[in-house]
Amino acid sequence: MPISVFDLFTVGIGPSSSHTVGPMRAAASFVDLVGDRTEDVAALEVDVYGSLAATGRGHGTFDAILLGLEGCRPDEVLPDEVDERTARMAESGIVRFGDRVEIPFAVADMRQRPLTVLERHTNALELRARTATGEELAHEIYYSVGGGFVVTQSDEEAAVLGTEAGESAREPATPHDFRTGDELLEIANREGLEVWQVMLANELGAGRTEQEVRDGLLHIAKVMEECAAHSLDRSGHLPGGLSVRRRAHDWHLRLKEEDPDRDPRYYQEWVNLVALAVNEENASGGRVVTAPTNGAAGIIPAVLHYALNYVDWVQEGGDAARDEATVRFLLTAGAIGVLYKEGASISGAEVGCQGEVGSASSMAAGGLAEVLGGSVEQVENAAEIAMEHNLGLTCDPIAGLVQVPCIERNAIGAGKSINAAKMAMWGDGDHYVSLDEVIATMKATGADMSDKYKETAMGGLAVNVVEC
Ligand code: SF4
Image (tube, rainbow, N blue to C red; front, side, top):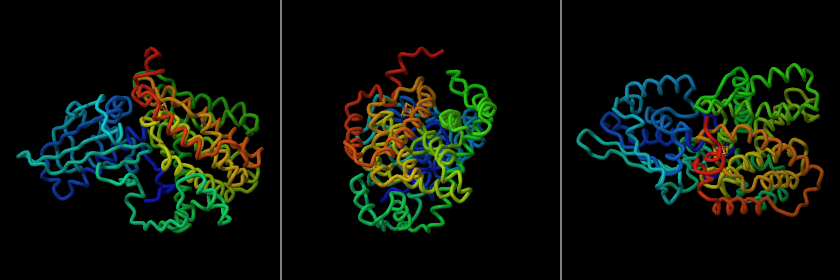
């Protein structure tokens, strides 16, 4: 099944797409699997494997599974409802399976197996439902493969559960099937299309109207903006026990005073602000757009903020130009994201942070190059530069929380995106390393990377910084 831009940008909750959104989605899908026999369920068995178990506490994985078992879906559940349900389940030790049947089951009943890595992917979750007599009603193994994508043991690799793509009945009539950068360039040049137009044609081929695609992307951008705005209203410390201070609130007050007229000299501070705000919201379990993961959710909103506020034609064209720039930016970023999903991975547990922050940075660089008027070669070059200088980036969050280094790393990733797009625009699109080569290198680097640096909280900053 072709990957849609709406698979790569989904509305969910923090703090992690692979460790929160994916497990919740998997558990909710399990409720669907039981289906008509929900009333017969008397007992649940949950096994959590690999990285999901190793960093599940800090990532909210176990609560996310319980919420999914109650039928909650990450794109629908609101943060207040999460808090209410989580508190009730913790106090009572009872899960309302499918929001209908009360079953004694708590986090302590989950079998956590951090050292057991199933062959297909380290983020694995095994669910069983039984009747009062012990009969097995349903059994499934789910893999949370990054970005909120979930596949089951029996699925084809590209199958997606619960995202818009998985729920829709679209026909796979992709007019421009591409899986590599070279294929994307060849199609664009042959058809005389920009990258965003190639992606748009594929969305239309999947059964959506152009208006639906545009409305959907503007909705995604609006949720990104609301996420940052909500975060800017919140001061104090992030949850989780590290006492990490929220910085975006105070920085916003200072920026509004120092830069009331949006002097371009302050662009970096505003970009940093948006990245921090989104990731602080993510770290506190708020509503975010997975882009393409939650840990890296701040980069694309931050670079989009730059595109909408510091590019002349967008500034001068009013609301219509802002909408057009948003649509082109997100479609282009989505096309680049397809290349990472197809050719490597966007999962920190699989390839380290280069797959999360690196992929997001590359997608944002491509999107910005498009808005800056780049050719298809310059867009490809921008995406390549951004990933080339994220190669080898490890994942080692302190205490398994998506806070340090993740929040700040998004601001740095956004800065790289803008620089990469500018460098590509100063060139003519001709460059030494292709995007496909850098994606292949990222995948190989991830395969060579020690598991200590792949979302296990067993290496790097996670062990060298004393928690206080
Ligand atoms: S270090 Fe990177 S990959 Fe790891 S949790 Fe943080 S943002 Fe995600």
